Length: 149
Image (cartoon, rainbow, N blue to C red; front, side, top):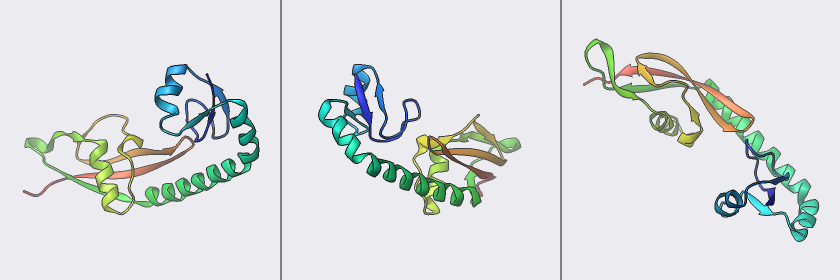
């Protein structure tokens, strides 16, 4: 099925692109979420008329993501966790823990956008990548410390 992307999707393309995808993927995921439109004659003519608006919206969204990335890049997060003997963590620091710490600073970030290369299971400083958009990412310093008590 041919579709018109309403938003940029890293695996498919940028907003406004006409791409071919599996019917089920389009029907069950892209169309219900408003990420795409069916590429019929009516929608293609509308696309040509709205292309500049779509591109302007994509550029505005990219600028917002870049501004947020700059703010996140400058931030250093402190995550307090329970530790046992030998300063070993109970479990690990998860993407949800990091998302909550960022949200507490006033920057809500979806936990699915946080890319942790390997589980954080030791105290100290760690770099975590936050992929805000397909081409915008920020690296945040996470300082894992022992929770008092």
